Image (tube, rainbow, N blue to C red; front, side):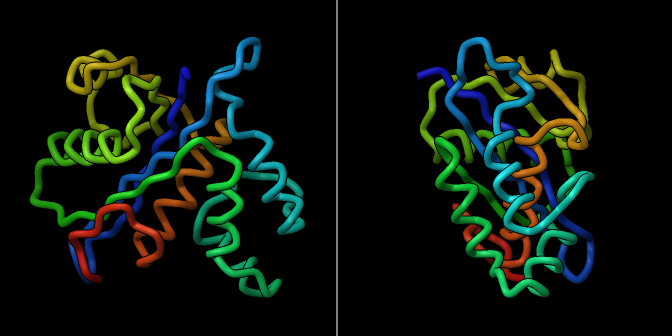
Length: 175
């Protein structure tokens, strides 16, 4: 099975220098634009929340869901049901962003278990060029904007939830 995984991160420096990297993976479907994988799940989530337009981000989604009586767990269930795999790691930052992000992605990829998926990462997740990220990870990496990539919006929601202590595959940071 060919797989495409979308990645994003979350984290702030206070109160703890923790960061999260999350992946949401989908089976690649022939004839379907690569960056549109995850659209059906995102569309269902928008319908559930009554979200008309604009980018979905964890903070806005969690606030709106709370007002509607929908738990973040229900949102994560929806994302998990609609994808091939979901994973997130929460780690302490030690100051080397490139090394830490590559290490986190490698941990997640090992945990998820797909061999050499295509990676589509949010700009800024890995502070280097696409070619260097591809070389360091040993697979094809593409950077994309979260505003136009459904899979990255979904991974932002997973990353935000993990940062707040929900469903981390690997958690080495207690905030």
